[in-house]
Amino acid sequence: MLTVLLATRNRAAILRETLEAFGHLQQPSSGWKLVVVDNGSTDQTSTVLASFANRLPLHTVRETVGGKNSALNTGLGLVEGDLTVFTDDDVFPHSDWLIELRKAADAQPAYSLLGGAVAPRWELPPPPWINWLERGPVYALTDPLMKEGPVPPFLVYGPNMAIRTAVFQSGVRFDPSIGPRSSTYPMGSETELTLRLSQRGHKAWHVPTAIVEHFIRDYQLRQSWVLKRAIRYGRGQFRLDYMRKYRPYPCWFGVPRTFFRQIFEQEKMIIKAWLRSDHRELFCASWRRNFLWGHVIEARLSYRDRAVWRTAGIEG
Image (tube, rainbow, N blue to C red; front, side, top):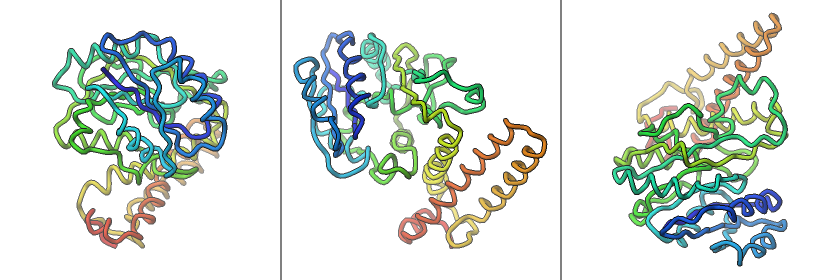
């Protein structure tokens, strides 16, 4: 048996569509269970969930503490079976999704993490500049050219991630301090977990035949949204990179000085690109600058917790 687990908050309309798609899934021979954690929704989420109670193997629970990872940790208490499949409330799985994950889990017993393919489902036709982006950090989309086989843990994405339940039975949980909690947050909730598991010896396997489509909304196709995403991504990467290296950095007010030099370099590139009317370089340099500003923001916020910084070995 396996359990599919997702958290949702105030997305009743798209959640209904996602659950409709779940109703067309092929059943794994060992059976499956769906756990949905309502993370304090104030819209029609509870009504939507109730409408599927007799149509899906659905179990629901409410978690009022804000944050996706807090919600997922609550949901882990309802998991059954040897495989826990994580996804989002805005995905559309192919009908054989669970069959393919089950097959890979059975065929690769040495791998604790399984990552399926994440393809886009665009609400509107994407503009040409979308091709300038790394779609993984921006939209949690996997590279369609990835072959089946071992992969680095950071290439296992939250919309399509399976982990052997024994990992959680050992006491492992998501870190509630990272990931979606409000409009501004450090990205990387699932990545933090997969990197932590990798450090403990767990390995990841890519399953390109286990496919979900991730819904990309119209507002996510605006450059302004993408550049704000760069800040959240930068905040998360600071946590996942600099605060894991355990070595001292020369700092100004808790911020490694190298960030300011790098931001200055990107500002120069932005000006040059603007003068040349090079729209691609202007956008890409703006992304890199915002990514670095995310580092600065998270470094400063983290510095307020002196205990965290002492543990990370960062000097002010």
